[in-house]
Length: 317
Image (cartoon, rainbow, N blue to C red):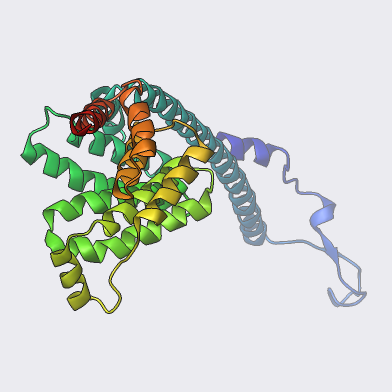
């Protein structure tokens, strides 16, 4: 209202001749004199009130615009601060992941589980899955974490369908859930898994992990037991199919993109060569897997498996 008063002070209303209107000669009276015609008091007050209301409306409109600008700027500042906060969290998360701090990473990211950011959500899916695989995690907790990971991955994909990582982790988590839902669901999920791995590779052909996972898909389908193949033939017109040679191609391609990026890729190169009866190359890759620096619980498990397979060679020799 103070602003309205200031606006009103800029336009004082004075009773001057400027407000009078002259009528044509002879129109005013019997004497034919030209007399000024003035507004009556009530009419003047009425017009004055209208004018005041108009000015007040203008002032309030101005105030509304100023308020809108202030709010808009505040929203932008808040949004920028939120983006900066998310970026900081992602940096911390990546550092913890590289350091093998699985539980600390999970604790950090679960604070932001309601986030709408796809980059954060797929990292949370990965962290949930990693905690599920820890040796100290109970079977009940593992199942909960596996389904939780799938939910986070699904949300990440919904937020950004162009994210290579979102497709990749969604496929991984669907595969994990299949362990709890029976053979029929597992076979049905195989098609979905392949579709998302292929999409991840399409979005980022230089992502060694996605290529590696496509290799795992081929390896798993190639070694599918006969009874699962029979179920697949009954349920689907075209059951999933692949070969060890195809799997080997993906594992090598992953190594070419990023050499020694993952201990499991080294292990699976060795195991695939074993399936193809090439013991020399199998021993080469298994040795690399055994000697790979262990940063995570999974790395330690892979070292143990590679060492056991290599001992099997020496025992037979």
